[in-house]
Image 1: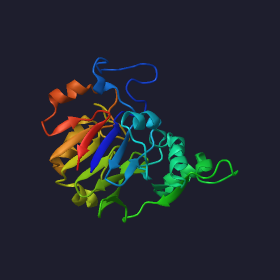
Image 2: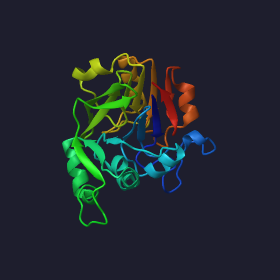
Image 3: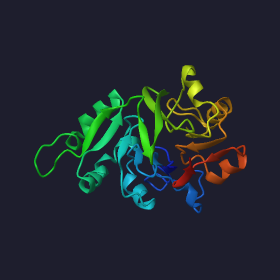
Image 4: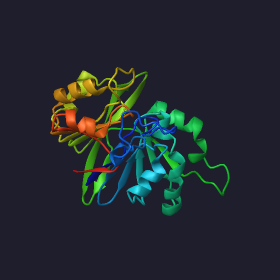
Length: 256
């Protein structure tokens, strides 16, 4: 089973739409970052986490031709606005794709992308089926059912969902605070993929100092920083970080 970081960039990506690279060296391909999204890939299923505005190119780049389920972390545009590109998988599979989201995200999706969930005319049937996140999520991997545990975290003024796969990897792309009661689910994992926006403080994200501090508390075998803005150059991070902490890059693949 594999976990693929499809995109590791902040809300405007790197470079931004205006071409701004910030501190990032444009000659390094690992500094070209699309918006945050990830894929859990088993023998039987492909489960997408978030539908970033860059989803189409992310799936093409990683040769992903099938999506079985989608898990959403939260309602923000950089996590949701690629949703229309799921339509092709309905066309291929001839059945609506199950979409899992918390209540605020479900409401946002229905208000803004209602046509995906409700059939208006015969020629354009509903392509997605909205479901609530629960503690019985799993991915099929041969004869096994591998658990996917959702954990609510704080992301500024909204909640976001962290996903823990097989008690081995936690994916926390957008977070400002993890509740103490949930630390027991996140300690001593094999992999921790964690939000790290920039150097300065931010009301909705962890900065570099806070990310490192949290990693030290949770003590994973390996930590991977994601949601990286143009402030944080790949080689700069590689140079200053401890060996067990690395910056993400688009397409980074983890074997579970």
